[in-house]
Length: 294
Image 1 (cartoon, rainbow, N blue to C red):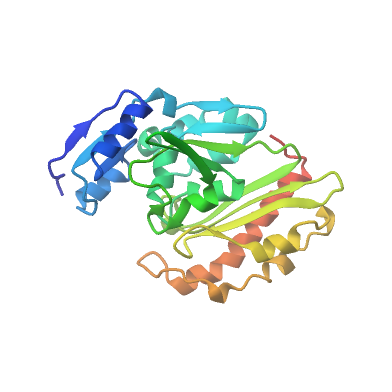
Image 2: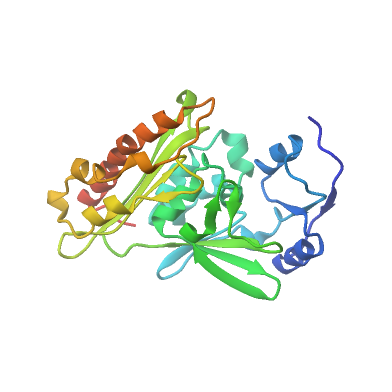
């Protein structure tokens, strides 16, 4: 289907972009366009104007600070994959980005676009939630921040208010041995579409006990879901005594309400959550066991 006629504006700065978003309340934000263009073709989005932020270099930087790394919202998947800073500090970001679609999509698609689209099959919402990321938001005359867990609010919905723009994603650099995992249930033998995803993060303290345990499932509800029951069982447990199967068994999958569609039934998704969770935990624990560090 062809696109309907739209107005197009290309700001020269974040401040100008925010001004345009407030001038045109029904504007759509164009970064990589890998999701937005499809939405427009299907006539789902009622946008009259596109604000193109793809040329804003300030939104494409990957920076390292003392306690975290920052990714501009318009950073492409390909830039993440080939970033030495990412590979040195949080390689799971690159390992996840390379799973997305094909090279053409990775050349254009952005981490901010993936987050703001917030489809249940998207890669980065559950991963960033598990990593304890902070989302930095710019609005008219204000800047704010919130956790990734707070940012993702529902199917295709985020906490962004009209006239606001996601500008940066800040990810902690663990100072202790840690493990990360991204384990999807991919449809059709590829990672183009993830029917269910489980992501994990955990750290090892000086006493050899697990801490900062975060487990997140996606594709089983309207937003990435923290599996706090399992987290509480594992937090403070000695690494060498970690009983993954028993911990996973504490999670009540009957409370999940995953959708059914052409890719997988809700019941199949529900039953796969503990399987993927056990795999994710074992992967993260293996990394900790190898002294896996940033």
